[in-house]
Image (cartoon, rainbow, N blue to C red):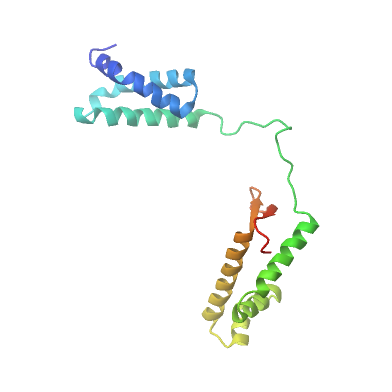
Length: 180
């Protein structure tokens, strides 16, 4: 060990090891990363411009070494068949319950929002057609529909907890309160 590295080792190796161990939760991996850190310190010590910034420089090298460790690990490890949950589709009963809940929430909206949503979301009218029926500009009808949807979403999230798969498809829900 060089003369410049020895005092750095004496002062920082224990706290760096603890810091690394906190991040990786494995003593042998922490030892390997610590060794890599001190090799980098040794090879780059002459690039340090201000000796007063030594501690932050060392910790920056350490953080990058930890990040490099995680980058080199496998991103995905296969799960055993026992651990993999099967893809689930919501049951017909669940769909009906959610549909009834949505219709109930829709019926409890103020009239102007309810009618705009019925025409656009249930009857399938274009927003410009909803605007004509309501006597509004297109942007006014669009805003009314968006506000109505936001009200339903807010109320729905208050009463239900939803679970989605990785594609964003609803796979399950649970009532939080008996509001629906």
